[in-house]
Image 1 (spheres, rainbow, N blue to C red):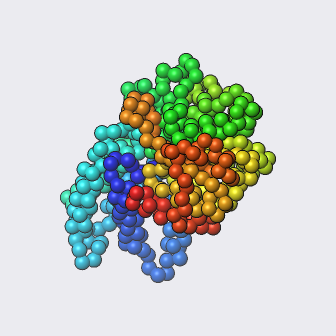
Image 2 (image 1 turned 120 degrees about the horizontal axis):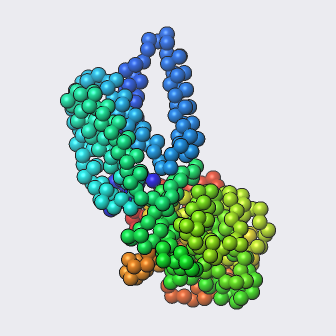
Image 3 (image 1 turned 180 degrees about the vertical axis):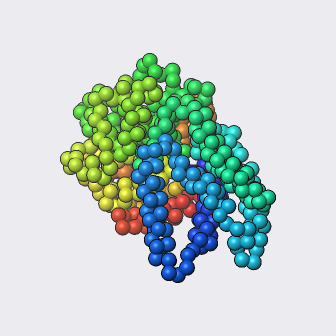
Amino acid sequence: TFVVDAGIPVWMTLGLHLALFFCVALLAHMVLVSKRPPANDLTGFYLWMSFGGVIGGALTALVSPLAFNSVAEYPLLIVGALLIWPLLGPDTVRGRNFHEIASLGLVAAFISVVVNIPAIRTLVMPAEPGFYTVAIAAFALASAVAIFRSTGLHIFFAVMSVGLYFALQSASGSLFAERSFFGVVKAYPSDQGRFVVMAHGTTEHGAMRTSDRNGKPVPITYYHESGTIADTLFAAQEKIDGREAEMGLVGLGTGSMLCHRKPAEKWTAYEIDSSVVSVASNSSLFSFISECGTDTPIVLGDARITLADEPVGKFDYLLLDAFSSDSIPVHLLTAEALELYRSRLKQDGMLAIHISNRYMELRSVLASLARNAGMVGRAAIFLPPEHLREGEHVNPAEVVVLANRESDLGRIASDSRWQKLEDEGTTAWTDDYSNILAAILRRQWD
């Protein structure tokens, strides 16, 4: 969530975060070392230290998702580290004056703030990008205060950073913000209120024109009728030719795809995050479900489990739309998962997979999975023209479609904008093996 899209390469932003986290962790360990008791009392010391780790882990994993509507524990950790800074003496680091180190921290933090200024100018995705900068700035101010040996002012800046964080939160303009164990889901206005956008972390999951509130909404973002995701559905619908059909959607989003349905189709949506269901079902925010899918069952739970409960050979068309977030559910993109999806498709069914992702390249993973499974596939990247991208909030989308035979792909098999899915030698992911780092590096090298 904190790897913000401010025009900075992901490796640089991630590197800044890791460097900051390293400094905070080092500071905490330095305090522990400076307070270490004599050997006779070390057992109790390490026991309490371990107990603190348990409490911290429980607060982060169990309490934070319920207490905050944003990922606040990481910034608060930084602020907490600032508060314990005065516990260190000025010469804790042997052979080097502590103030020299603080000066280096100040310079590094100042550079970080300057580099990240674009995120302040574009506070449409408000809280996280803004507070990222505030947290770094607080670190810089604390460094400056350490140089001047002003503990009281140092604590003042740490407390002020917390206040700035919540001020940014309240000024963010979000119409809805809720955090679950799967991340932060928000709905917020965009483009002077012409659109309402749903986002998970820093990634859009759908949007709707506010002018569509009084009628059937038009799917936009990744799901526009001219895009590749809709194209896979239209190809399946042409094959079905008006007969009754079962269609599945893994990853509800705003429910945009439901407004492409035909009268004889029965749709079922699968979603793991109850917060997403809450936003998508709120007709004051998005009306795709209320206008197009009131009879659509929404099955809450992990798709690997919920799909396993469905009959074999149920679906004519299955869309997996769960991989565009900042963090992907790897277990849904393994050989075992593909075998499950395939078994729930009819013999001539189509499996469409939305793999747009800013940080990871996933096409080659699917190519290797398809090779091992003996399936055929096509891939396409939709780049909307400027009038759609700027005026209608239509987003680029990368999609892979798989089937048992070439004929099962329908017209996509001969469509020039769809390329054959070529195996590039990437090792197929399984429940026992995946390589996220390689996927990130491939995206950076694209």
